[in-house]
Length: 135
Image (cartoon, rainbow, N blue to C red; front, side):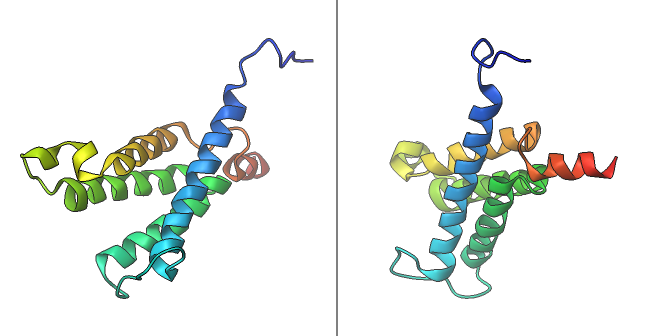
């Protein structure tokens, strides 16, 4: 029997990180698509609308651990595009800095989802359960 008090709880911390990040990303998608806690919604078919769908679907997948690597990779790329296109805009003045262009969250999401894409869903992901059921 393992002694959980002697081992660091890294797997539990990771699943908490993955689940919370996915849930928060889902909320951003809900906010964009349905105007929850927002004053506007994007035009259907617009780039922001597509981003909202990606946030909603990938956020749910990341939180539950379904297709985790692919969902996190797509979410990471979406946040990279969001940062470069909407926050930074390739301006090399004061808008270059994330604290000025308000792109800090996009950069953090980009790196966090890239890490999740590299690491996978972890022990408590639905992905892992499906993989063991198929053997």
